[in-house]
Image (spheres, rainbow, N blue to C red):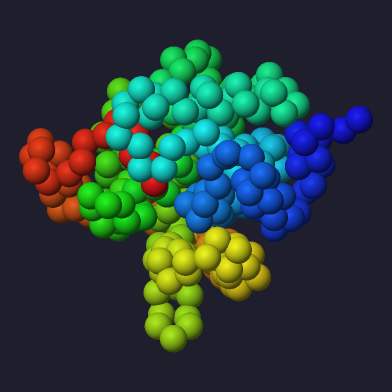
Length: 269
């Protein structure tokens, strides 16, 4: 008999996976909210951009499930440190394999697992960066350039993440794409706005899947075509520098001011 793990992994349509997660969260005590969908969409875009040789279906499924035992707005450090491990144990109980559970447990560094799975490095980047873009009770969401400075120089300081440089290039790429609607805004800002403007989880999923995804996929392809044309014409494209020296210096200078920033090692939504 197929397990729940077989059921959701065999379903390759992301919208259907989210629907499965929605109904599972209603029946079982697991964490699944708009922030999970938001971060999963960033992961989808990153995988489409980077062409990293991983199982995309597995990574997106892990994105939906890795926070399953997270406590919303938890203040207890023990719960913050243990939710990924507790989630991995739960996932084993419902039929997921050892490696999948290890990938999910390694979403943060509290497991001290070594060596880390490649897919875990993707989850870590998406989880921390995506969380910093969203408002929290104690602070408003950071701008993408600010979030990247904190990700690189604070959260992952002295830590090795094999995809960090590629992720920075990806955000740089997205920040050059504008989505026109009532107001013209960057792709990430548009996703954040949809998040903030849509209260109900199911409506947010619908807006992301049926409105946002077709637009951004088309615009990303157009941007890739433009870059390819420039490369063919021997025109050098922009490199890593998304944020200016001024932004970096400003953020880093405030990192030593305990009243300026919340200094959690892992800042998630």
